[in-house]
Length: 196
Image (tube, rainbow, N blue to C red; front, side, top):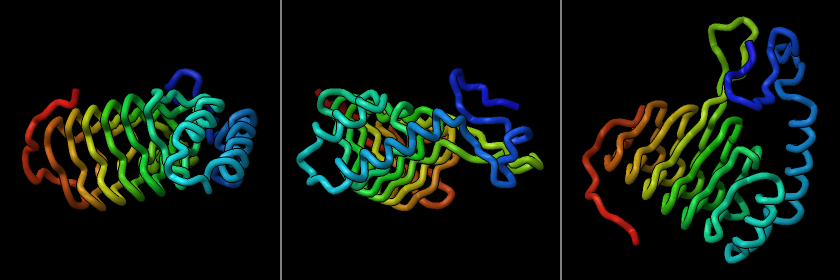
């Protein structure tokens, strides 16, 4: 039971024995993550907020796709940079966790605020081998993931959508709506706007 995403490095739990301590990812994948962790810790995690270009350079070096004016704070944690796409004028704030087991796309003008958690991985809970699964996350154009909110695997926040502070989304959030709570529920529609 391999993952369906092309190029996925997730191993079959039946043969890798990940449930009893075996690896969940290929050796190459684990090596890239180990090198990335050292590089980010030594060269980026401690850097002041204005050094966005330096951090973007390091992320690109490890395979992330970032627009020229995308911003990622040093205290953010990017689990696997090749699965990160950050478009124009998008922001990943302080202490954000991007658990990028599958692609995570932060679209143009979107904001992921401090302490938010974007989690693209989970497990097949009914599988006796507890197979790891990964599903992409998309944060739409002009969307906002507020402070300490949680976005689960496979979730899309539509254009202009808001997930309120400390809210939890395991289902898609429609465009131009505001959702709050755990589980996230519709609070109201959001006024539509465009940013030039």
